[in-house]
Each structure stands twice: as C-alpha cells, then as structure tokens.
Image (cartoon, rainbow, N blue to C red):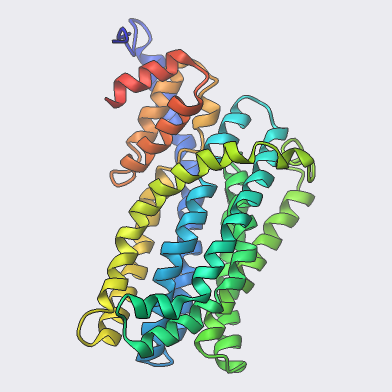
Length: 364
C-alpha cells in the first residue's frame, strides 16, 4: 500500500485555505460560462423539437424517436470520443507543449470523421431499424425521414465539438459561450425559415441543426484565427495529425463508453415508449420531459468540468490536491463524471507519481 502523507502540514493551514479559496474563485469564473454554453447548446435540440411539435402529434413522435436514435447511435458516441481531448489537450497545455493541442484536435477530427461513416449508414436505415424493434410503422417512417435529414449535421458537428474542447482546455470559455448564444438565437430564425417559410416541415427542423452547427463553427474558427488567443496552440494543419491515430482511438472509445452509458439510459426510455399503447402521445410527452430536464443537468455538468486538471498536474502537490478537492465538491451530480475524468488523467496519463498516489488514496 502507498504510504499516507498529511495533506496539511503544521503552519500551512492558512496558506492552504487561501489556495483553496483562490482555486474556488477560478473554478467559478470558468464554470459560469461553461454552464451557459451547455444550456445554449442543449437548447438547439429543444428548439427543433418545439417547432416540430407545432406540426402535429405524428411529426413530434417521429422526430422524438429519430432524435433519440441519433443520440444513441451518433451524437453520444462522437461527444464521448471527443472527450479524450480533455485528457490529451489538458495534459499538453499543462506541460506547456502548446503545439500539441492543435495536433490533437486535428487527430480527433480525423478519427471522429471515420466514425461518422457507419453512423450515417445507421441513420439512413432508421425506418428499418425501428420497424425491426417493433415501433409503429407511421412513426417509424416519419422518424426515418427526420434522421436522414440529420446526416448533414454530422459534417459540422465533428469539427465543432473538437474545437470547443480545444478552446476549453485553454480556459477560453467566454468566446464559446458567446458563439453558443448567437447560434441559439439564430437557430430560432433558421427553424422558422426552413420549417414554415420553406415548407420543409419536420425535415427543415432537422436540417436547421446542420445550419446552426455551421454557424457556431464559423464563429469559433474566426475567433481562433483573428483573436491571437490561440497563437501558441494552433499552427495550422499538420501531417503529424495522421500519426498515432490508433493510440488516440484506444483512448477515445473508452471515453465514449463512459459518456454513452449515461446518455443511453435516458434515450432508450424514449425508444421504449414507442412500444406502449398510444405511442404518438407517449413518445411525444416523454421526449419533451427529457429534453427539458436535460437543461437542468447542464448546471452541475458545467461546475464539474475538469478543464484545469491538466494545468494542476504540473504545479505544487498541495495545490493539486486542494484544487482537485474543490472541483470534486463543485456539484453533487457531477462527482462520478469528475472521478472518471480524474482517473483518466491520473492513472492513464499522469506524469507526477506523487499526485497519482495521493489521488488514488483519496478517491478510494
């Protein structure tokens, strides 16, 4: 067993209390924009569902089933794989190997783009899959049409989710929040234009997500190129991104599973509701409840995002432990997710044996 060492030595209580207070302030300054960004990004799906709801019960049920299937088979997997950047970019930023952040981002985009091929094939056959699962034929047909129009959203979603992780690991969170706010406001107009003005119906709501993702990506890309905040971390496209793709995938897929298992537990309930009597009503109601409830999860999720761990791993050991304790106590619901992130950092990629052993003892 690892020898225990006192966390606070004699005469250092006041200093460590100041460190904890300072770290808590840093965390709150980061958490505020993160919470807002999460709420605004989650609002895109909610707004699309709201517009479809005005078209009728069948359209809403079909869009709800398609959205749940798309989340289970696509968006959750891609978001989970992109979470590997939290570990890699955070570690590189803390080690002051700034150029690696851009390389890791490009590498992530390549791996996620390859994963989009089978995802698109699944979405193309959504109707057949839902019929095989025993769903109502009319709802399955509507869901299949909605899912096919979601496929274009994969193109901007991959670089967008990687770019957001790339910025967050550098503690650049306010621009992400601002771009998400602009995107959410414009998404209402895009949905109205495509659903009602262009007469596309529910298909327009699905396509609107692709347009809004492109808007968000364009804003963040222009910020990266023009602001100068990422001069050290973004050196342009590099052939180095094509190396070690397998190593990235080996980290990305376990990261994806941790995200997917939590996400699927909610989305599968929507899919199962299609097997109940009166599936149009049951699916619609449950989908609205979950989409609304998902907004509440953004608050503890933002509070507990461990974007400072990579930097903490190369500072004073006492500061590391106190910073970790402050982040662990940031929100009750996010503790388990935070433990997962800590474990990946410390045990898979930790470069400080003292920090690794201390965290191992504390988390046990």
